[in-house]
Length: 353
Image 1 (cartoon, rainbow, N blue to C red):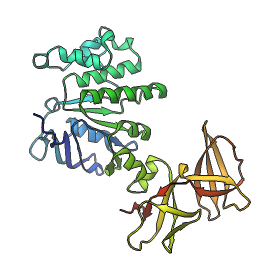
Image 2 (cartoon, rainbow, N blue to C red):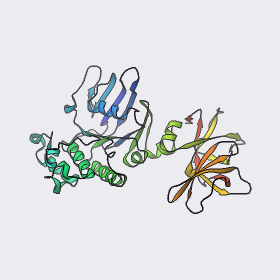
Image 3 (cartoon, rainbow, N blue to C red):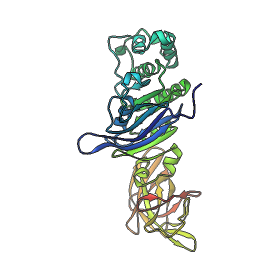
């Protein structure tokens, strides 16, 4: 019987450097069985290196990696990649051009242990049954991605690792492949760690998201928690451009340049440099004879228009408005908070707990 209390992946204090600077700096996190964790961050932040450390393609300078309770890396142990029971989907798919779809999927499968049924199961899950005799050059990009996923799932790994698997697909195909891939992983019951620099992709794919920056994991949480309650200004801005309005507290009211606001996490004591985070969807603008701002720029986005608004203080905020009445540059506007929005309080770059 599988012990559900043991994480599928557990990483503690992992460091890896190339030269003087650490690429992965003290990574610590766990992934529960059947969960999809997304490692999200800008290029060069250490997310792919973290994936390679779990797979065994790189050896950490320090730290421990365990898979289903079995230590695969510490100061005294290093289990080779092929013995970790980990599947891998590479960014470029890494298919063998001279092998058919079925033979690509079967590559590396212990048929004595699992039988050919394991290969057929993976082909069925990824809807490749009718393509099993074709070769990679006869397939579309999306079909090649499905072959790579089937090959990773066929040996029935304890964990599957996916390194930006949709980066070579066009935007229309990418959206469909996200849905297919997530459904396939969930149907298989396999734990997955997924690397991407796309916020949209992370929010869709992840049960949890770990945001990385310069080798450090800034925050781990559910997509809702990461987006709506970012731990610091980096996470806030990386998930979706944010501005921070200075706040004064008077008689229990939170006063900003755009008026009184409701806050989700009021400070329990006096704090310095108090501000609230606002995003474009929080801000409503309309022409007014008592303006507090002026339109500096507008960006047409189809159903919506993104406005840059210069406030009287000199601070710029953004407002996402429906494409109904477009306002021209220089239009004097009233700026208010959208009804029902509770804002997060920050102090010196960090969200108040």
